[in-house]
Amino acid sequence: MKNKKSPLKDKPLRNAGQSLDEEIENSISDKVSMHVFIIALIMFTIFREWQRWYFQSPPIPILMTIIGIPVIIYFTYKIFKEKKKIDFLKQGRDGEKAVGQYLERFREDGMKVHHDIVGDNFNIDHILISTKGVYLIETKTYSKPMKGKTEIEFDGLDFYYNGVKYNDNIQVQVMAGSTWLKNLIEELTVKKVDVKPVVVFPGWFVKMTRKHDSNIWALNPRNLQTFINNQNEIMSKEDVQLISNHIARYIRAR
Image (cartoon, rainbow, N blue to C red; front, side, top):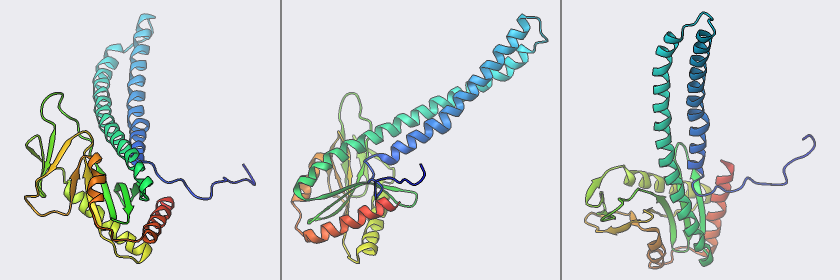
């Protein structure tokens, strides 16, 4: 409306899992909807050709059926493939939201929490800022077997899921993210702080054997507070507030 503006001065902060929500929405609106439209169009065309044949209009139903059936099969396959991707994204989103809701409790202890920080072609799930340091938290919501062992082991170098080595570059991802965040904080506040990379696996029993030296924590999210509580205080409350304020401005500006 003319001569009016929003009463909000700043954009709201992002929610946990918001990037995945946006990716799910794009998949549904852009890809699935288009596939459904094409299938419906082909089916309508086939129906019209058989209708013309039935009413003695010059028909070509056999030709249209030969052309249309493979197209329908192909796009039906594409829909199921996209559905599988969407289900995977939804599981990841729900995991991020669950961890985000758990982290909100940390505010009671004076910690600052931010969710879904968007960088260039990547995002950080959560940031936790306290007098005991800055923590980058990456959520991995992996499916569990219906029965049997559900254990993730991190030896400082590799991840093992029920004893099977699994490589999806988690270490590279969180180390790159923590370096980026460290540089961002220094750029925004002129303060040099280390960023602790943490990978959490909701619903899994997680153990770190530390066979190899690593700066990464791998945890069930419910063990995070215990680990943080065991750290020494390295920042003042004023610095915690300063860094949090600048991170919030950065998020709103994106």
